[in-house]
Length: 123
Image (cartoon, rainbow, N blue to C red; front, side, top):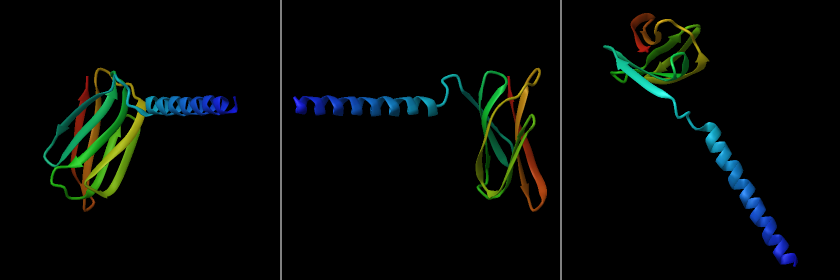
């Protein structure tokens, strides 16, 4: 009898752990409706993940030559910058309203000079 009770307790514990792990995976997974759009300029590429017309999840800015610089991302009231990297993902997670289209932009600065600003237009 005691053995059967321990077995049921183990099964219940394992089931609870698997359910919690499954819920965590669902909570951290990207939404099914997320879309990705990217474009490249002369010196940088800009990619953004977004939902609908107004919600920007993140912006990834990459230098095309692989050399580091100060990378920037800007959209609406969001402004982010990262120095001395050749690729960076900026987490925005904001609802930003723009009419008729939203411009999600990235930039590259080197030696204190703006090298390029490039934008992805979200329909």
